[in-house]
Image 1 (cartoon, one colour):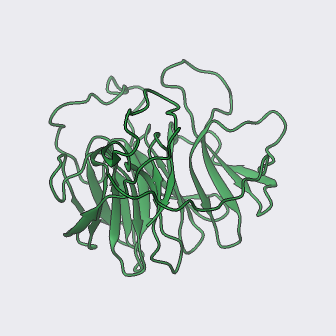
Image 2 (image 1 turned 90 degrees about the horizontal axis):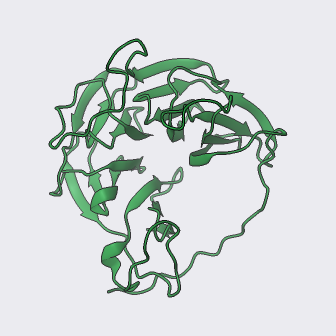
Length: 287
């Protein structure tokens, strides 16, 4: 049991984003803002509206102005997009997307032209073009290949860190030129081990924060993958809270059932960490 955290005051603006007529958001797993205040939303939606119930492509990237006016869609029908997951804007306003379905990471320039590609998905003509089989333990990871990656971050030197993700349970590091450097992490519950590294963020001192979601903790590493520390943001849940999906825990004051980090954000020039909690209770926690 612990203390209730003070509530952060927020103002909700209804209908802020003005999509074109007939266009809708699906699930939106990631949003990002560039230096001009433009807002990007990576949506699990399908521009054609067709396809099978299972395995349908669900990835669209929308750009909006600072007031929510629609500007354009980037990468419509892009080969590397199948199931939207991660989105970040770097210091040069380049746009980076992480696709869990295709196992690919894309870098676009600010105009939306594809510049770099990391990873590769199974070819549609191959018998391996099917969902990845979950093995326990999983097959060993490969350099430069991902299995259901989730997020991406950058250090002060321009190095790139990819959370890889649902199966490989590791962090992959590339240098500023896009060349592979190393990876760290493996499935498990011990220090330095990961279970669904779902998000990643780096502070101004180049500490690497990894949202270890299924272990309900945040682990901190240096840029070479050396474990530094770990902590939890679990706090008691407000009385009366109800789960949207699944059952609601009987004891909301018991912090063991919450605090799983779904997303991490460290604003520029700040060492404040914002943690988006997983489905229940689904809070934003400031740490």
